[in-house]
Length: 172
Image 1 (cartoon, helix red, strand yellow):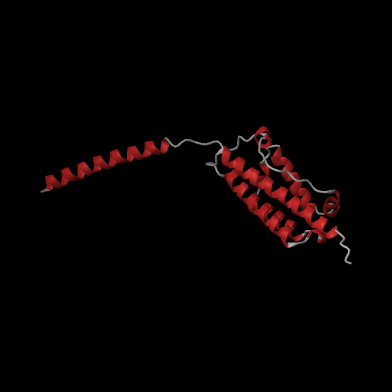
Image 2 (cartoon, one colour):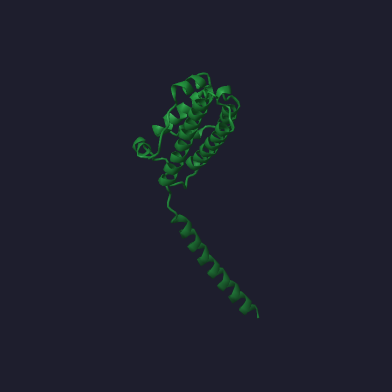
């Protein structure tokens, strides 16, 4: 009886040792994907409609410091400089909070607030994808495009808000 039990234990130990070696080799074969090889040419190849601010809208945002910081971030992203996303997340959260709180009175509307919320979402998504080691170059480029489109839509919406507010309609 002892010999049978001892033989069974030896067989199980041998079998489980073979299984561990196979699992280890599977882990070694997982390829490492490099994510941070986005270049300025890659960003320039992204197709989207880029709205710029109208002169009246530029006057409305001239004292909005957070918008100027957002413009600087956009220009850095267009140069493929994504180092902003390696900073502490508290800085980013504070920036987004101040961006929402300090909207000039001439631009305050639900549509502007919703565009800023979209920018916040896309910015946080871009930051998380940039910091993931498994993100592919195409995923990162798509996230950059979504963020640039969100910023362009904010500019478009602010232009429309100022245009609507300055329109004078005479009633008969």
